[in-house]
Length: 93
Image (tube, rainbow, N blue to C red; front, side, top):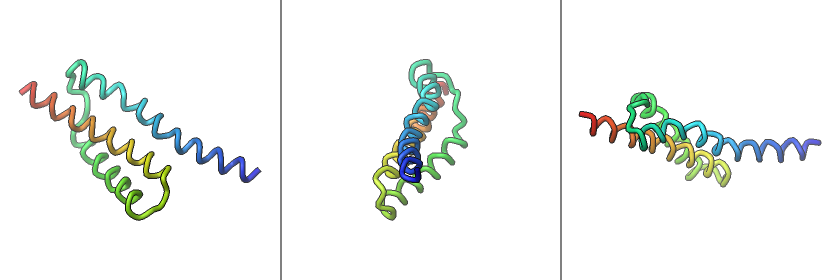
């Protein structure tokens, strides 16, 4: 029973990065395709900073491949929204 619980937890943690990508997708689509300034730059700057720290901690401190992948996907999704937000803001000015 404990083994099943651990396997389920590993699977759901791994799936959480793809669920996060699905959650980021509408914002990325609005910024990239429709050029709508729909993301709060200050919030995404803070999220990018904290997820970057998490990613680098996983990369250099913890020997956990799954954590590295999940935190990396989250970090790069945050960076993509931040980058697109700056591009939309610059092009609308």
